[in-house]
Amino acid sequence: MTVEDQREFIRLQEDQHAFTDNKKAYVSPICTEASMNTQLYRTLLHELGHYVHYLEVVERPESEKKDDEMKEARDNFYFRLPQMEKEKFAHQYADCLKQKLTEEKVIPFDRS
Image 1: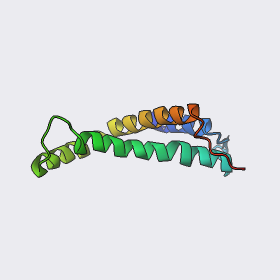
Image 2: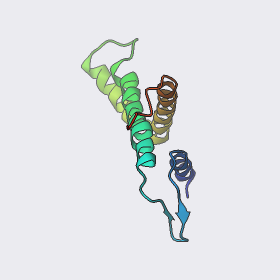
Image 3: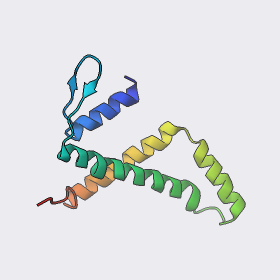
Image 4: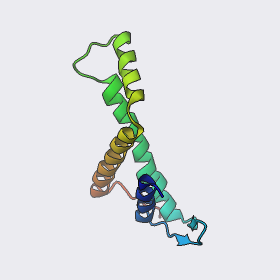
């Protein structure tokens, strides 16, 4: 496993996915609680993090005028950023937002 794969494996375990190693692959049964943890409370927030990062780099720079040429340059800059940098931002954003929403008792959602 790559380092990033190992990190994702740990995240999945933190989401309550139970894995067994059958010597060919790691297998995890589908579980509603673990799936909700991954999809709603981590992946959705992570994808929002990508959007926020894009807005901060391309759409909302405070020091530049709002002209199309500069926006295109910022857009090109964003899409040239290393994928790891974008992923790091999105993971940090998701972690912070999840912590805040948990502290405010917004998540986890009541399923009763």
